[in-house]
Image 1 (tube, rainbow, N blue to C red):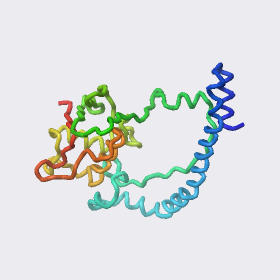
Image 2: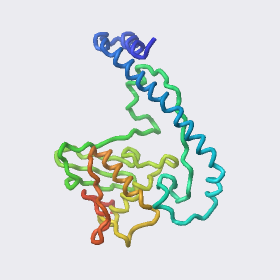
Image 3: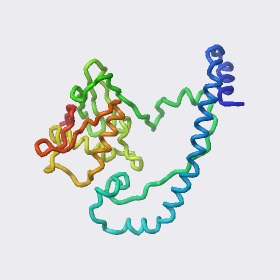
Image 4: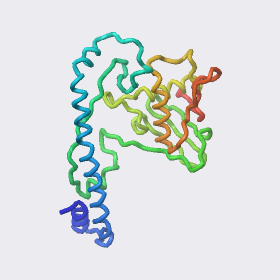
Length: 237
């Protein structure tokens, strides 16, 4: 039985109108087949990456015990954890595609206890960063406002700024908080080396994703203002 047929069968068993699901079987089967093919194509490249990583793991582990020079502009920031200790990223092998039932599909986007889902606050077409207002309510939550849209609150996890290892705010969130705490602009005088060179770029990418914008919200550094976002941002102080 295919995924589409299984969903159709369960829908009928649960008392749903079968006419609503007749046209779903073939498209759902095509989607699952596309996913399956995509995963199969990824298996071999990821195994090659795993093999390459394993071949240099002893040297990397030795480097972890060394006092390294400042390589923040050379090694990507995601290869450092919050204490700035160099760490080798893990590459997970692709798992087999499993068939899920209709109940799991319906609940996939719901929050569960102890878990979180990524959210978004997509700005209208032709929106400008300059009209956006963000205020920290505490170290983990911000309030977001845009003209014509409902004001909402989000935490760092919902905005995609969680450290995958510690579940605490990552360096991109810490940088955003630092900008807010320095009256909306971060100059050389208040810059912390722990941010490195890539964190500001990664913060821009994360904000673009969350707000559905194409342009970066934090322009290049200027001597007069440092890193000053186009949007207004306030601290919780």
